[in-house]
Image (tube, rainbow, N blue to C red; front, side, top):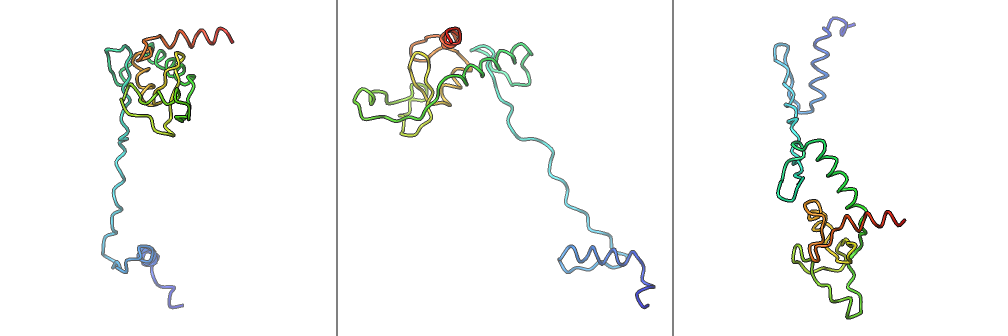
Length: 155
């Protein structure tokens, strides 16, 4: 019967004090602690830069619809080029390929590589970035899209 006369607000305050776990108690006149402010709602991921033509660089948000379609088609074609893992092999002729001519770094066993239709190989990241700017092989300047499109026609 003794607890019947206590106010509901006092019980709510005691529940708040117990949930904080810091041992501080709020009196009847103390203000409630403010919650921490929410994290900023800004997304800090960088906006990708694309090259609608080899000499132009623009943010993805600045591209026209036609340029976006062309870039999406180019990305689709790049994804159809075969990939593999660099393995120098034991034959002397296989050891001839030593470096990626784009980044000028030696291939290391296990590096992800991409094969172009002209049979030149490059690091996947290097050649994918190159092909987004120019759809020709950096070594022999052979157009990559013509070879890809002709392979679709023969299948």
